[in-house]
Image 1 (cartoon, rainbow, N blue to C red):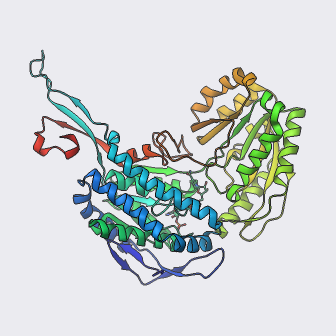
Image 2 (image 1 turned 135 degrees about the vertical axis):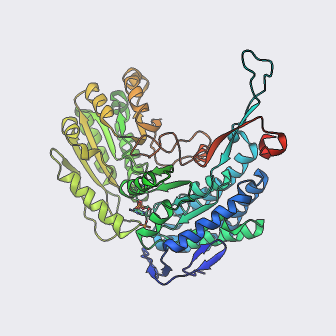
Image 3 (image 1 turned 60 degrees about the horizontal axis):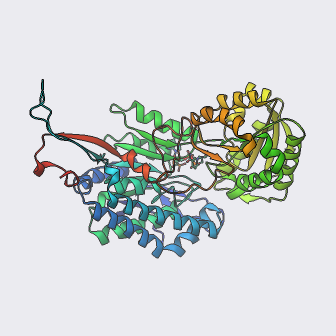
Length: 501
Ligand code: NAP
């Protein structure tokens, strides 16, 4: 049952103003607008909770994460019902995403129990060392304090209320205040109910988690500028992320802003691979490009290929593979409008040729495919900007040198892909040092959509893929964003954190 309220430190609170959800289908619901006062109460409670939660045992936190996963599963049908209505995503997708969300929570539980993430180091005292003795030095990663989380519209479960950022912060020992996403406030509320139940079951301080719904931009701004917030996890648009990042940097005490923003995820198609299996690559690309109406941050929007008959055949095969894909519902009216604006921008750019156009309106997206020469692409920086949706751009280059020039001109990316055969190895080797500096994840002969949640995953990259290229927002390494190293010098055992004794 939806209450339309915020969950603030264990209490369900309303306010004076409300906003209405905008479901893809089904009934709209009213939700309380989050005010700076709600944010202040939630963050102060989070700071109070840190006194106990920041020093809780790894076993207790693992039990909490597992309890959240159980409580989400217990509400599975309810979450799917409200989630499909709010986002327009199909049931099967939401059920899969729920599994990913509970899997992430349980993965973090086992990760912290193993303890490697603490990166414990010890330099024993050398009292007789000349010319100076060495003190006893021990280092460990410690939680940083209350963390603000902004979920993504396109992953209402796995990147939202109890998504990767929340799981990583709670695993680290940091209380979390989530700013609810206005695209799925009801889904967010039911997940918050699950976390609330887990807090009670585990007997934790209620300030360990709060959900403040949005409704106005002031809510998020109040959250990132609150003096007790120590870091922000964000997944969303470049414009929104940049605005919040700048706010974090302009605080009297700046804090880290871990923003995962946009990316065009270019693919480089090497000569022999295209000759041998261009049609197959085109089909795979069409599937990846249109999956979930193209609303994936890892959507491969650009294919770079050497011009000639094989490139022409690739364009034809990609067009044919995309043609039968029908209209799909987008997450919000705003995202659908932004998709059409992006399409118009690309279509009107100098040298851009239509390969496939379609008609989409309202909250729908249909695929579009365009072709442009490497020279025109290099002359127009805007063609390298993300269009969030199922739009592809094939860049035909003169030769390997121009392909390298395209690679060098790229902004930071979440992923870059090379499609290659063994005979393309030497050419591909020339791209690797360039691409490694551009992206958080490099792929060969695959498609970047579908991000594995595991130890070695990096979902991040140089700006604007992310605002912090040393971090990832997916996988166990993402816990490092909410920890900081502390060195203990000659501190007696009784005063050390338990994990360092
Ligand atoms: P968004 O519009 O940036 O919204 C994300 C969150 O930030 C929402 O809670 C939003 O509040 C808030 N927000 C945005 N601008 C703000 C501002 N100026 N001040 C305060 N709060 C602000 O992005 P979205 O619509 O959720 O997602 C679509 C975009 O996300 C796409 O462009 C896509 O590329 C990107 N994305 C990136 C990744 C990745 O991992 N890199 C993953 C998924 C999506 P409201 O709820 O009030 O709107």
